[in-house]
Image (cartoon, rainbow, N blue to C red; front, side, top):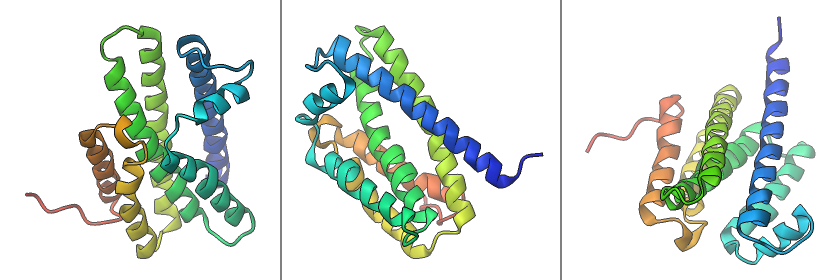
Length: 191
């Protein structure tokens, strides 16, 4: 029988595999659909970077590496890492971008891209669920949860005008809903 640590390690392995598949899909879209310049994924990412909102770059190129360094040095715990990666980046930023992209693809003009993004979205759902499970296990402080909720709207707005206001509001609300569904916070009172 597998231990809890073995199961967590296996899930992290599966998530890494998923992220690699997602990167391959989006690189093919960049090369074959968008025609971004570059002979390699790194060159296409560099070309795409010019179109990425500053808030998204800050989250992925500044906050995420800084937090990873803090975790590696033992100065920050797993709860903080899960809060940023699974709940903010995957649960809000990716979710907002994927919803907007799926809305744009709903006309059926690019059925392969639509199907690929739908599959990525399904993977991200279980990644978020795994993040919630990790948060439950780490028993986060009320301050961590409060900080997560405070960052939700800013994270939802990271894409700027590329994501419609209704989608931004929806994904920010989903953060609250997810945390209340697993009893980390109280549900909102009915209107």
